[in-house]
Image (cartoon, rainbow, N blue to C red):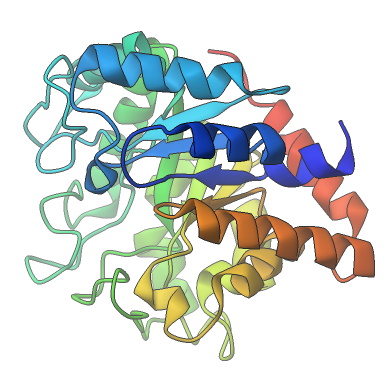
Length: 313
């Protein structure tokens, strides 16, 4: 894989509207490694149109494309009628049913399970999380990972190091969570450990500020977070960011700068959810960082290797 192809491979991209010739030409040039479909982008409204879109983007690739969407059940489901939206809390069988429907559309990755432990009804994750008890959430998370894998789909536990103890949405601002490391280890991380033990393929890092981990950087831009995900949680798979276009990032850090920092710290795939122009700028920034030595080529190679090592489920 060339340097240009490696740079594209570590970026997951969403775009607004239908797939145009211009978007497809950009995709052929940049070789983005991930396609993200979210309802807000209104890419396709029928199963046939979605299947065609995913297939057309995949045909532009020289390397593997990971097509992803969020199918949690409850209030977070793709707006395609052929994909059932099971009520929360979903278990293994219901998850497998939803994921199998995604698979028929051409998707590879179901961005779940939500692995956050909610602090209570005031949590921003209430209705998406599996409860307030770490053991209960861990058990549910393991079952959902298994259900996604039953459908031969990749899974992604989110949002490490834990998004359940705040009422603030990272869509608009950076949530601050003042908890001890002991609380993180005993309350927030058991579900991620369960996901890892069930072979979860990705862990998605949340845009969260935990002063106990890093007083300067948000958790997703701190090497401490990734080190602890590897050592304390024992996760060996690929690490993906949350959408870098969210307000928690853009309110303080340019998207391209944040993307380079995430990769340099040990992240493997950067998510740009809505604008291909932002993805293009991120691509250019990553390339400039590699050429200048700010992002070692070896780190980029490792990220690509982690993505290539993902199973074809």
